[in-house]
Amino acid sequence: MDTDQTIDDTLQSANRGYQTIKNLKRLKKYAGWVTAIVGPILVALLGFFLFMAIIASLQQQSCFTSNAPSTENAIGGDWKDANSATHKAMAYTIDQFKNLGMSGNNIAAALAIGLRESNFNPAAVNPSGAVKGIYQWGTGGN
Image (cartoon, rainbow, N blue to C red; front, top):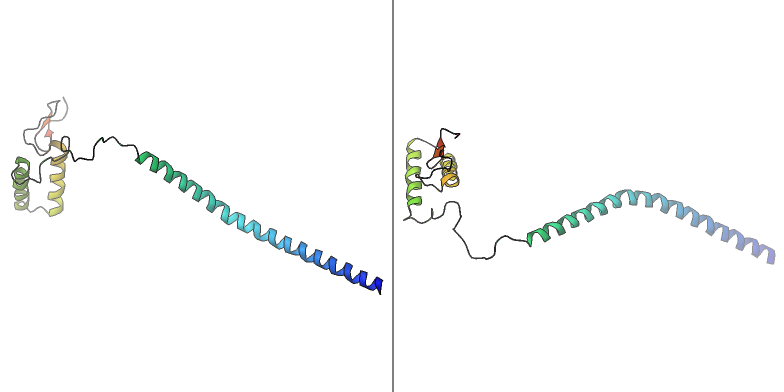
């Protein structure tokens, strides 16, 4: 009986070893798939977090030394002040463009160009002298 028991134990041990090997092969198969899918995702996430860290560090640097609003070099300056010359010139321009039948979008674009080019100053002259006025139109060139 001792020999039969030893044989049974050996067979059970071999069966457990076979099952272990079978499970390891299955695990290896799934590990390949997991690595193929999870690996690129982890690399992408690492890249994303690195990118975000760089962006966050760049945003901490600022050329502004104060949080106070400044109109010193602001485009348009005082155009919101109803008593300012800029506001009055823009209101006049809006009325003229409406009389020409221009749409609101076209008028807004024209006003934005005038603000950017000359701060809506009809007396503005480019240092080269080739262009002048609100929209900085002229002969072009020197």
